[in-house]
Structure formats: structure tokens, C-alpha cells
Image 1 (cartoon, helix red, strand yellow):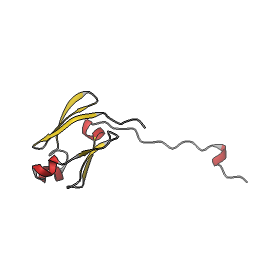
Image 2: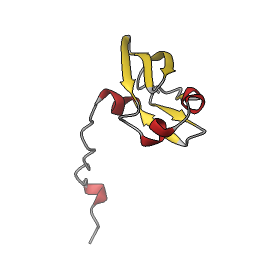
Image 3: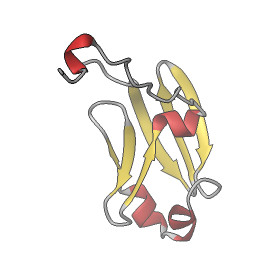
Image 4: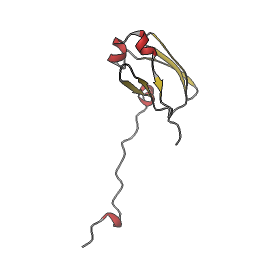
Length: 92
């Protein structure tokens, strides 16, 4: 399975998360994104886990999760259902 994003050098400073995502340095004010993170103590914000797949970030003490795509503003097209095949049609 390929990684969603390559994330390096993630660190919190106040409510700002700074990290390198896919080779680009990014800064996010998480207080604008999450009420839980805005109200959390600095010690709680500092304790986060990056998903090995590069999909998101988890704050265990706060039970908060954010996706990297969401932070970057990436919107994916909704999945479409495949048209039924002959094998899917009921037999008479």
C-alpha cells in the first residue's frame, strides 16, 4: 500500500502545527480547525501521533483526529458506483 503523504519534522508551537508534507513546509493554526485542540493544554497538543500511512494525525489524550488532506484542503471526488454487469442481474 502506498502512503497518502510523506510527513516529516512535525512539531507543535502553541496551536500552530509545523511539518514537512510531501517535501513542502506547511504551517496550520489548529485552533481554527479544532475546538478540542484550541481548548487543550500545550502538553496535550504536544502528544500527537502521525499515522504510518501518512493519512492523518491523532491526539490520544483528546480523542481528536485530523486528516492531512483536510489540513491541505484536498477534496476528493465522491466514489461512484459501478454500473451493474450481466453477472449482477437476476436470472429469470
